Length: 574
Image (tube, rainbow, N blue to C red; front, top):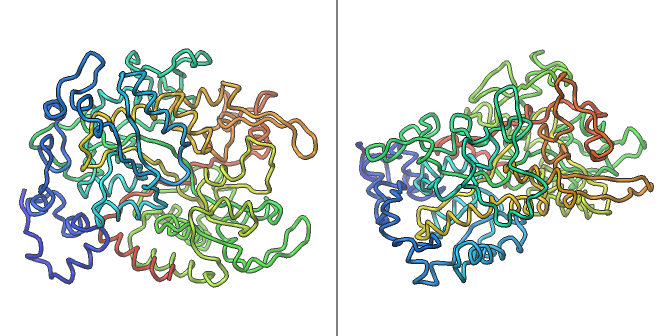
């Protein structure tokens, strides 16, 4: 592998400009020498004894470093040094209950007879992928476990910030949505007596036997390129190829944590559902709105808000502008056409489809910026943590939002019945998966793996999703949420009618994966029975078109294009 040394063929001023978004990682990617010798010399400084190349871990060397395992399967170093039992974890805000993290210590004691294990995270809470990336590239902060979104996993891998995982230490990875594994004997639920309500799920689908009835696959390498170093389509030159032949077993980089969509949260006492769903992203252009049901007019000045997240904001703008362009070209004349199938094509541009969230040309990004600027004056601005709370309080009436954050604010599993709702606009939005990864700086690899495996214990993952109301990628946990009555809510709505809610049946959380949204053997959308939730019945009655086909995964567009986005983002935000 060849390359130039830092600064040799690029002016210092340009080097500093590009390094500003991600230190040496950004520079390496910018110069196109991500895996070059000069680039490696910079990041090989401080190489760990178990690394054979940048971010390439040989787990035989880890065993030599951490020591032999005792009869309980614990490496010697964790018995000898109490400080080795403390993990430093970076996590999004409001993303897991404190009890789950506290119970990690109990789990390690009961499973491995290892006292004093803990995960510290409350001082490491971030609100955007850009913030996390800045922490680990510019401030020198070191973590054991991080939870970046799928496109940021790509960025971090290319920048040498994450390591390949040891699947042998992650048996619960087999619980992630995908084909039923041949051997599930090594999946050992923490308290199996509590799983009597359901066994490991198995469904016959048109494509084979899957652990979920929708045939979702968050595990197979070819379908989840960002997760595996072996995918040369995502990582053009997977590092360490002179030492390893990467395959499905040894190249895993990321384990899905939770997933969801990005759409619109709104006050249902202000907007009539049929009005706002007909508008979609166009609602942000309005300075006033007249409710078609009540006839009341509302002043929307400063009542609109977007996420403080560059890629999410531009995804919304690209979808809105692209949809309009398709209509003008008579390619998408009505929303009804959209319901017949997906409109989202693969990036970079497909004029016959909706614009991609991964567009990378100036014309497209400029058009998205122009739309955002056209109504910025009547918007409150950008904020992420308050996307749900401010809808509940009435400080904002409509916002750009993540599915789970709005659902967490709505609390459909309670008797509050707040006038807040969520939907994915007809023009499309984002779908994403947040992932558990191990930072290259971690020196506690065995314990970091045990933490990730613990998070995917079927009961633990179900409890996380019940608490934060995001969607689990764990098939066994999904079955628990659906079948165990303790996860459902029964009561009466404000009109006194019986109300039943089950998280797995809520299309706002699970989109097309909600059982009520799945077609039966005859291809007809399933009819909700008496045990199905009110929300599931509503989905069926409305005959809603597919949700996930409107959404698209964001991808890493590279440092040059990311800088291009930042240029337009600064104009929009400031």
